[in-house]
Figure 1 (cartoon, rainbow over the protein chains, first blue to last red):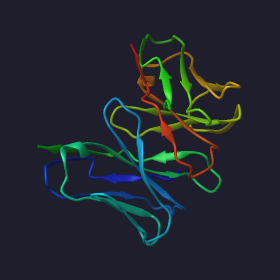
Figure 2 (tube, helix red, strand yellow):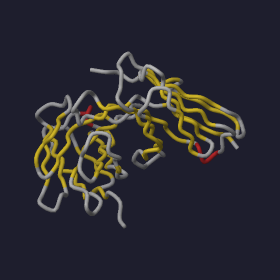
Figure 3 (tube, chains in turn cyan, green):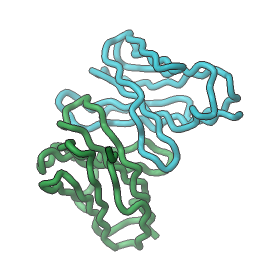
Length: 112
Length: 114
């Protein structure tokens, strides 16, 4: 069973700071997804990365997929209180598998 | 358009009881998946259904079962509840249930087992 390791587990920063969170595994993925989950809500898909080395930008969020497709990072520029939430990476368990496996997440708090 | 709706939003049960959770997918979505999210963890896959057939099952005991109805809504049943079953149960839908297809999650049912 593949394991997605996310770090850090918790992150508390001041508004305006930059941050990076990581998602690592020993497995190779055909694609990897990032979600954000707010308290009392279900996860919401932010992005799917597919190609090794791929970089995707979503406003102040930059997502990168490792060249070997084993790891990914999420960088937030000039964090805002609205970025507060649980950031989860997820990937499908194997070829033809319908099982989406999530990491434990990074809980981000942005202090005004 | 309405998103994925789940009911009830909160539920309190005692050990040994049975519980049924319900999910209505987004209109036009034929696939429903269930996830369990224990406090401090990411969601864990329980089941996926497509066109009323089970497509995938995670590492959960037989106390967990589910079904999908002709209107594509779904129920998750848990028998003989244990304290460790306390969690947020999430339902997600997508149009075809294809691998890599975007999942749309509901807000979940918070189950507390006392």
